[in-house]
Image (cartoon, rainbow, N blue to C red; front, side, top):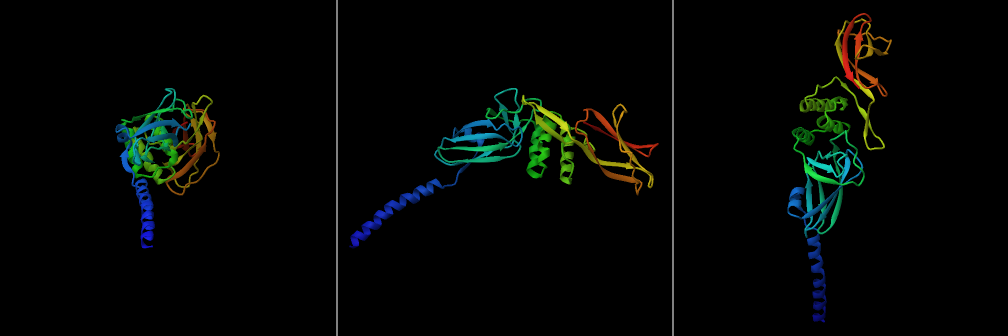
Length: 292
């Protein structure tokens, strides 16, 4: 009887030990490796496709692990995604990401990347990309800034276009202290003047994949010297002096120096240069130029 019990227990151990060994092998920690090194060592194969977006969730990573070990792969900021179709936009990854792939398996992940060519067509869904590296020092500065600062998500794509296409940094938000700090940073990076106003734009894509930009409002702080107790008016003119808007309303300042928030809806306005004229009725106090 003792021999029978011993034999049964031994058989049980023969069954359970391999199970624990397999479990240990399967759950071992993934090897951490950069994407470049994983490709160089031929540990993975890579396929890149478009989601049909030009910003944010825009690139699908398909990684096939060719090795017998799980991999934790770092996908570094600074990657460029060149489209197979040269008429479409190259995208830029601004922040580090990662993907974990089990041995001999394929994994998928959507990566945030942003358009660097506003004059080209939006990437077509499921179209392919080729991986490259950015050597643009201005982009490198933006990437470094994003590692240490919280930035309004609505300002990220306009910031990329300010570098790649010299589009105005006025399209970045200036609503908060963080926004203002980022605008100041982008002014230094691009060499553009940090305008007094913000001019957010709506971006549509036409049937041919091209961008259509429309400025929807002008907002910012007007600051000027005046005389306490005098009625003040504000009108808007085209660059050539043609008046396009008059409030016909006045306000009376309580001090000799005034700062106030200006907001103007400009959807549908003709593109060009304009200015806000602040005056007392017969004397101009200041003017503030803006562009649409």
